[in-house]
Image (tube, rainbow, N blue to C red; front, side):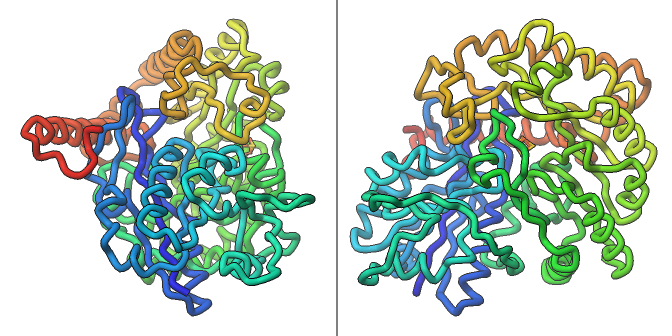
Length: 508
Ligand code: SF4
């Protein structure tokens, strides 16, 4: 069969360089492409962001970065495909995805259109919550969670074989009575090496920023999937059923070495939502990296659970090539953490930050503000704890205003009021009621970070120098180049619109 896999453009909220616009890679789509190729299918990929990351279009309160699907409608990838798989990479790109589905359906009324959930990112969303929207745009099926274990069953249904039942991880417009959505199989699949040769890697590498600290050539990898925790602001408990599945250390290291040799890449951004649940698994991965002289560097960019990284592991991590660790205290208040459903050992995290510092591993702490349970006193505790982390050696902080991403418990319980329903659902949504209050708290936390860093001496100045000279060791050091780059795109877009040369559907 001929499959065309499509990843949408990226959304950038106007005036906010922190809660949106991160260039996440369509990792699950690259795994699916490799999986289909191994089965002998014909596969085309249209990665709208990666193909043209310097192209910008305006959409109300945000920009879309990448090429429009309209530019590909006459290509063989569209005219010859039997099945389209649209990748729901991020909740922020959900409106773009609906638009793509509508255009494909108009162009190819007879083709099958399926949407694949991104179950391995906190920026993803749970497809069933937008089922009606997708079906009304002509989508035939929603593929929820992982698809590798029962792909044959999925294909039988998509090929409309007579009597083929609706697979348990699929939703369709008319759901048969008794259909229970079950995203994960009980067996642990092994995954092929992602088919990055089908993507425009240069598009990602040429940007002066990335999700983690920007290095020359780099690739994302997943060493595990899912997370057992129930955090109420997060979509992962729903998209993974609170299950965590680890990949075998040997398979992980073999994939790193294969990617290194295939693409000449030595920097790997670990994108697992919770990579270190079994600490001994990472001991083994590190040992194998050293034993096989992999000569690579790795960065935990999506957040590790601090308690699951033991202090005595830090030297081994550093020796194996770890250069960055992101942890997520979320709040300095145990009251807020209790409501969220997350335990966090504040004392251990301070020791971990100090230990990483002494072994040359940069650390980031992610904090939330605007949780419905957060009081002024809770915010004060977060400010206090942030000061302690900086004094322990923290390199950067990321503060987000809690957002109701589709599938999280806060979303399902309608606990967050949105004043402007048309606003971009970003990681710090401006359409949120009382956004100004939370934005103020966010600024205060950022201010505390900067003041405490200044008190520590040359540290912040060195970070500034690395940022200016494009040698980032933390995500925040990506920022000056990122802001400059995006502003340049915006200027170019405006000039081009003024001159009436704006292409296709830009300036809508
Ligand atoms: S620890 Fe919490 S926030 Fe992190 S992935 Fe798991 S559920 Fe989501």
